Length: 345
Image (cartoon, rainbow, N blue to C red; front, side, top):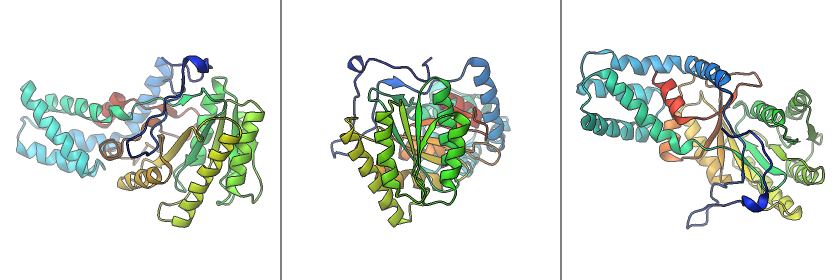
């Protein structure tokens, strides 16, 4: 397993940027893995909480396989159950087509065999989303975090800071969410809980705060700079333009500090309860910022979880972490097969 944070020799593990022919920024691959799973016992406990969180949706899908035979009615019921789980039309059609193919090839005879095949189909669909967050080789690694109000963005930053600091990484927080009342105070609380430094300005310009934080991170030799941006809806065009400006300013700060292409990571925090709206958010923020990763929050209680299949099918941005509760420790690395089993338990 990967250690959550290690310092590597930059010369032996260079950054390898990827992109498409149209010149759209690719998903960057930095040198140091920063997303290992928890120890086995802790991981098993977390998986149990994930299963409990997705239990309502899982029960709805599992009921489809309660009959005695495989027939067309089963596939129709499964289609409805997947759509109800927020899997989306494109991903549902893909899963049903793939399931029919595998069922025929394996000569599945019982609904339970079909359910196990569906777990494999979903795991394969989600596999491209399974990728660790990597730190380095530039120091600090600059991570910009976006998300709509209420998604759990600032809380997720606090949890991620806890994971980084717990593994020995030095972290500097940037309170660039100057749009929301009390956001700076909320991030300050997280900084104090994690015993890390914070750059903030009361009523300051978010781009200026971001620039100062990058430069301060370099001067203070921090391993990571985490920038908390203002929560906003993709439909708030003037605020999305401000977010683009923040990224441009962070790029300028990276150039001034010789940190390479900054920000090194652009993460979007998504509320797992928002269904297909989450996919719309991924599209909008990816088009605006060029996302490198996602954090899925609130996968407990009423979360349906099928939206990850929709994201994998239509906009496969890696899922670095998923969260199932409010505690600092309840942010874990994403594993496609584990998630498929929890959703189709």
